[in-house]
Length: 293
Image (cartoon, rainbow, N blue to C red):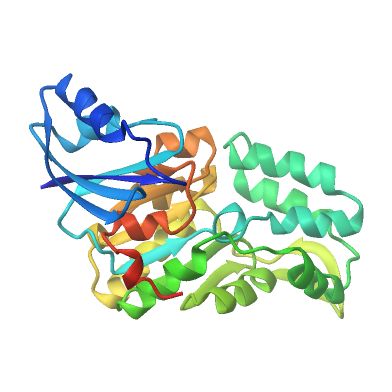
């Protein structure tokens, strides 16, 4: 059975269900049962007479302020989650924040934007941004983590709820372990995967150590963790915002673009453009009384 979950950033417009019925009717489909997950906030609609692919097209850009997930009810509650870090699990771009300490924020941001759009090779863009950090002390990294990194709203609730329900959750970043490890610990991820900065004593050399964790590596980690725990890809969910997240988004059972670049959205199964990370819980059928806060 197909389910469309309408999730409002604030509250669903009064005409949301009528609009859903109208756009479905135009395709010869209709709404079957409906189940409220949270009053005026999130509702499940069973769909009749339409394919998954067509339903996702119908609900693309449904209404301002409303995110929509369309999926089969089988394997709805996921057993494995992999999330990107920068601009996904956290609201910041770590490399740009570090570059600010070195006086190269603008240069780093320009490279980041182009890389996340898919306009630059990821490995080369990572090396170029890392080079801007040469000479920074390890104490600056600690200060940056403490003072400049902000968790994405709802992410701790998402991960801790999934943990409590037996899922495995991993943070996989094209950034650096110096950020990913403390972020993963604070949120509750099982493990963090990321790149390693090179140091000479307590000073950054401006180099990143091989092998580089890039787009394909994220996909490989997804498959490796599935194999390790005996989990099917259909039982997984991945979250990301940039072009380097596309391979793992395409490979997962449910690939989600989170406040993402247009190219990433076009490769996703669903996208969150208005709400926070708790939308992922509604998408899996969790009601707020089942959340771990």
